[in-house]
Length: 144
Image 1 (cartoon, rainbow, N blue to C red):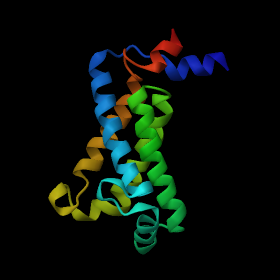
Image 2 (spheres, rainbow, N blue to C red):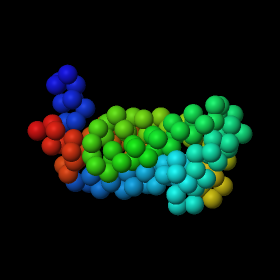
Image 3 (tube, helix red, strand yellow):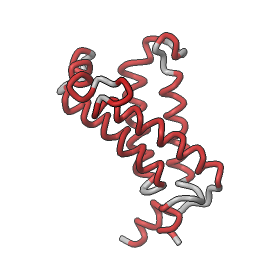
Image 4 (cartoon, rainbow, N blue to C red):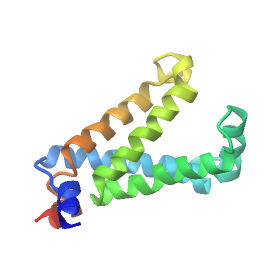
């Protein structure tokens, strides 16, 4: 078990990845809070569930709960720098689902609800999965 924890938490990344991790974490947590709680102008769980059902992601309530939880709690994990690799893996999958089910048909640009933004968040998630949490993180402290 100790080897698994070490493997998940070890990082050689510097402060640059820390900045990337925190900004991405804030972004993910904010989007997740829109889905789960209706904060920041979001529709909340019931509204997102209804929308997800309408685009074929059923059961809508479960899908909304999973997407919102991945973004909110994954974002918090990124902000804290705790369990960053598992959180980044879940967030990457969430962004792939968003790209292929919602945004791809609309083209690249965000102005048309395209996949531009989700692709950027996917790239950040994959980078964090590879590099780890960076210097200023709880993962780094755990690994030491």
